[in-house]
Image 1 (cartoon, rainbow, N blue to C red):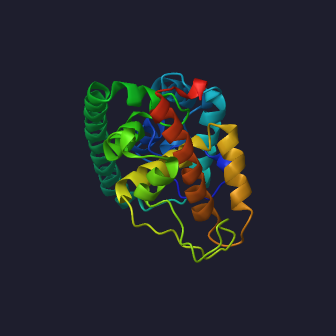
Image 2: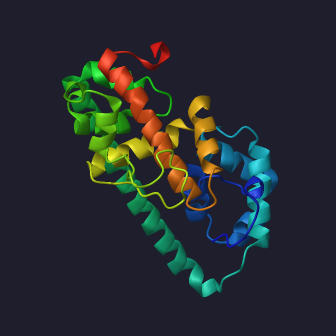
Length: 245
């Protein structure tokens, strides 16, 4: 087990549950086995397990070797039970991920069949994937039920108490959360992703984040989700895709 505190740029793997990381944890019996492997052998291991997806496999192999050198050594008697425990846990994670993937595909297929136009509108937005699109559509039903984006936001519970500032300038302004909690969840998850893909939303999130000193992320993300509601309403009500928004 790699018990080492390093900067993100010094970690051999960005995802500890990725295929290569899991292989390193389960296929090497001990840290010393990694340490005494040559860089060439470790590089070939990284290339094979990652299917040659790393830009610089030699660097990854070097970082892996360094992490093993700097890691805490366990008693040799603990190697086998620990390896069994890690392998068992990773197998459970992989099994659950496979089940989730199967369910996600079923959800996508169903929604694409029932609401093809709405689905294409949402999936066109950078950062909104099949599952989030399906979730939003399933909770909204038909956009014709809402006369405006304000009505849609209210239905989702993305509104704030009127006794507070209408510009949401107070750190303690509370969201009403009286609407559909599932739709609100999907919209906030969508906003969290969209802000990383669309500059307009990224800038809006940053602006709202630095307006206050407390609850910065939570507040900025909720307000970004509210902004996203306006765009989603426009796309669905006009049957448009994002590029034509």
